[in-house]
Image (tube, rainbow, N blue to C red; front, side, top):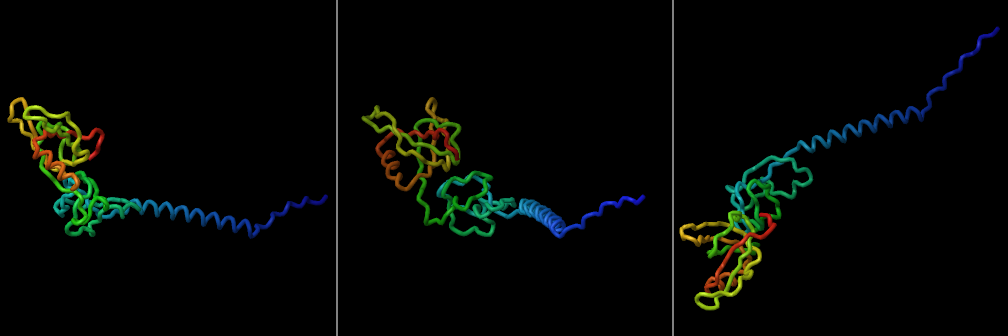
Length: 209
């Protein structure tokens, strides 16, 4: 009686070995990609953050900024780096205290299209109004010595740079505000002040600083 021959194993083919090697390569690439992402996320760069609220048109001095190290990734070019501060920079929009300073939030002094005026509100202003608040200026032109027209908007968008409340007048507290306005609105404000109009400053509903 003859022994039954055991089946022979098929020899490994070149293609099986190639698939194995390709799989190893893909695993290595995946590990390297994850490492790169993690390393990039941990990489920080020094950029500027505001130490106080800076309103449009104000000069941005080194004392108004502090350097912070943050991981910004591809967005790093959108913020003012610690090596890019130049002289005679002004804010082009309100920069909140602690906010990272975007490159488009500052510009050269010659690019400023705003200026500041002092307005005395004949009525008390909301407690919500502070430095950086966006407000409307309303006015009521005089008809005669004791009567005025219905109030209407004089300046639709201004930013508060300073505010001082005066509670000394019994029953009629007032406030003095330094407002940042477009240069085109200066004549309008000064005209309303010179003709005796009643001025009031109110916050813009839903506006952010």
